[in-house]
Image (cartoon, rainbow, N blue to C red; front, side):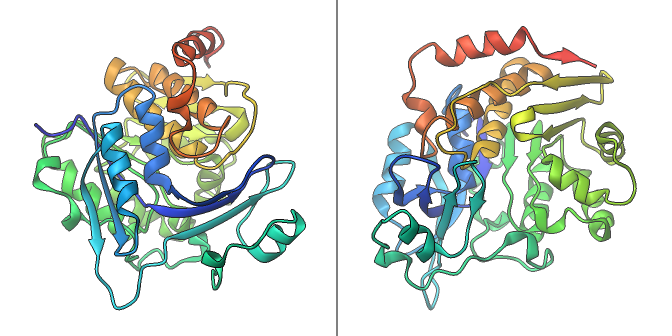
Length: 336
């Protein structure tokens, strides 16, 4: 049987200096795993699609299988040189991320610089050419036949060419829900025409507030108006992720607008919080078919992730904590 969910995204080897506490050095990460962790708070029946190099630790894949994930869609790419999946993030005391000057960040914290980070150079995805495919992005050809009849698909941020191919693959089959978290590289006014073609195959669109404002730069400052314009091209649900401000949810079919607050959590490591929200949203929508309840599930997943490091930290919390937070958020979410 195919898995209930499929998530396509990127894997990375993470080096994280959180706002406080111990660093994570060469740990499994990437938007794929953070979305999977957010989903797994509620349901682990998911197939994963990604690309890795030959040096990617096999034990990490076995660990995913032990958690219950189907890794059939994770492909090893054989290239002339190893695919660089390293990722570095250092956070300030105010939780601001920095991706460059790794040496200085380690020195400032009086930590030994890891040899495995030698030669690392940060590549800002927002500055990449959206029309160029990335060898580290999953492609439609990577999707196993066993995954193609899945009911619910989530596509994490990666290059536009690969994302659009993935949307086209799933939109014509038996898939009921295709959710898309866009990449900042193409959320720009000059790329609007290309994006509209992709949105025709998307059920749920999950941009951040910054990405949506960049797309409609100079046109409107009204987030609800932006959501309405996006909905004209296909998506039935638009969720605007606003960090500590929570989310705005526009339900097109019911013409409902919701404000969903963020659960007030202790911040230990913000890495992957938006991806965890998307995974939780997907699980919640499958369980309830209700955009508001889906957003509440996503908000709970995000609240659990931010309290610890690593994509699967939310799975180690006390039993019943997720359900308790869900109940708490239901009391304060509102329609506007």
